[in-house]
Length: 122
Image (cartoon, rainbow, N blue to C red; front, side, top):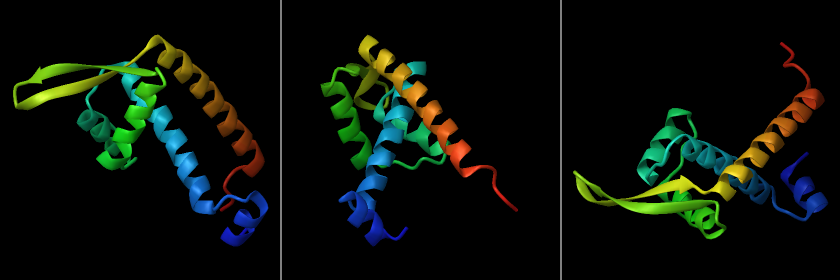
């Protein structure tokens, strides 16, 4: 399906669909990282880069702010030996519950998509 057909059929530009999907995936990944340990934004970016999910600060900070404003994250300031204090983010109990729901939804979606597309033909 072409970009024009997608936009015509859904009323939403393809780039917007991709952006929303990427935002949802990043949200899942960020919350998953923070479920293992509190982290400051540079650490989160490094962990995402390790998995080949390249994210810049301009993308991360608005997501962290939105997640904090919705009650899924909290933060604390911690002194740093190598510069200014750092803002460490952590999951709230609401964030932990939401992450569990996201995990379930993700695995349900992956299963459904894999059933639909089938194995890769060589």
